[in-house]
Image (tube, rainbow, N blue to C red):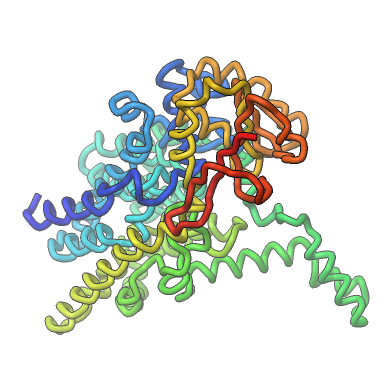
Length: 530
């Protein structure tokens, strides 16, 4: 590797590694689930539900994609069950993505050293990619695997071993993140079609992965996709009924109203609205992610504003070369990869679901940058990029914790460090159901014996019999002396030998709690003894 590439990779690693236990502030339910499932598999060969080597771990009832969980196992084995061990794999994955993008760009765009280094640099400093690389977030995996699969395919044109490796990498990608199960088969079909190489060896390796992946979607693995799809609106189809009723009240015949207000028109309208929103300046450059669950701060664009003209210049180059390889595939990626995100519902812009367009959107930015002929302007752009990177880092480390902490379940580490030493003093510890999936936070931070959790989780399966989607929707359930239920202080205040953990709103103002505060100083969690 050239000294410039080494410097870029080193920068990428530092930006993703420094302070990973504290930034993003908090440790989300998804991350805790990843970690404890890996710990259970390491210790027992089964997940917390007692299922041996699951292809789609049940987790909280949403049947998670398994790859990140299995990649976490060796890190838990080395470093123990900790936030560091769970987040470190993504730091390395994010750093490796920068290396892969360098070699892919060099391979497909004419062995151009400067262009390849810039593509790696743009991904290394990408605020979007940095944020996704600093937590145990699944969307970061296909950002590595899709470019790596493509790079291996290019090398496989002259080396059959690389072709097998390409199929293997794309196959693993199907188990990295559910959105990848939609885009990878389409991308592979286009890749084979454009190259006119329907490789039997490639398909022989890839198809078993594809069959297994879609088989899991027909069983438990389809639960998550069905839950977040726009064809399953949160409020049912009430909005469609309301629109139809309002039109009739204004004099439109009911049969005409049904033509314009039905499930099909609603779904198509939502899809087009979502799809176009992901390429809006608001999402890309100003508002950014609609939720902070993945460590990204709402109100901050996922791309730097200076990239706007670069992307526009790059888009022109793509349009001019649309019939040439590899520009055809890059354009296809940009058009197709947002579709799974557009088919999903959620608050604002779910930036995690459309993250698969990285690093190709950075490659387009670099194409636009290279189109600038004036050296002074190029240097000015790079200076602005550096200034915006510094601005992002200030926002990420000093402002984002104030905004993200609640969404990232901040406070559990602090709560359990207070509760664990005094746990033997209490007959029962009641944890409020207002806290998301509290059973896994307890199991994670106490490093609870997985055999014991597997025994207790048999009772949790009641959630399926009751027609619920997630474990924490049960009215009451237990994990040893921990009971997870609603807190009714009028009754609970009379209990003896009982400790309570909950949010401030779970208790009256008269209590004297041990307070766990968010980084901004507001109360996050209470530990209360009657």
